[in-house]
Image (cartoon, rainbow, N blue to C red):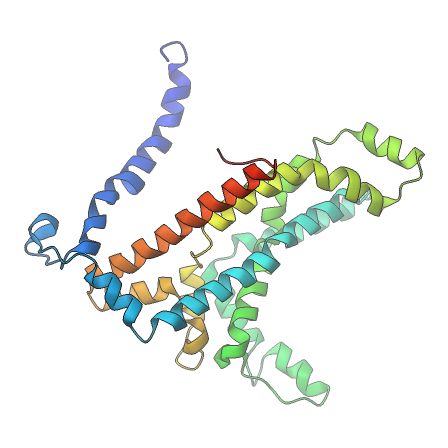
Length: 294
């Protein structure tokens, strides 16, 4: 450690970040089991056990919120997770470098757009009066659709706008893994008569499979964590039946309603579910002889 002290100093800010923002706040988890009163503090507040958990599980909103969170997370996992893999595999087969760089730039760029701006763009493009999409629908004789106020459209808009924004950025790690594949393998496959699809299926995809498994495990570890900012900005009184998820409910109950113990209990429940899923998926990956986190 003394010999490599420069490296440890370089690592220190990251270690401090995790200690201050991830480990120290664990002390506050106990308010989920207390009736937190600000003037009495965490230690002085009375202990109520699992009262807040029972209140959440017995509330009429529990199943609606849980269903929306699970549906949105599963929808995002099925669509948004494989999209960058497909893009990376496709780009890896492009031989025209100028076209490849153009596609990479166009797909990377949306990642740097603010969530607020993205939702503003969605409101403009999907407007029932002046939106580009509804103008196209009207041009072909259809009736305009109020997309942003329709519960049935909320999840689709959320997921596919996320794919558009993040597909290029998420593909970077797969392209990096594909760059490590030996060109000799492709040359030998071409000599044997393999076409591009065969080379993708038998060379490229198996090569990035460890990376795919690791990222899948990490995604499952945050399965119940739906992006709060975007959901909250897209949410309105008309689509609330489809858009109310655990994160927005915690925000409303905790910060807006000042129910700190109740919202902490919901957040802890969410974290425990994510932890259990992470352990199970990692165990499954290990049992199937794939790469695992531990």
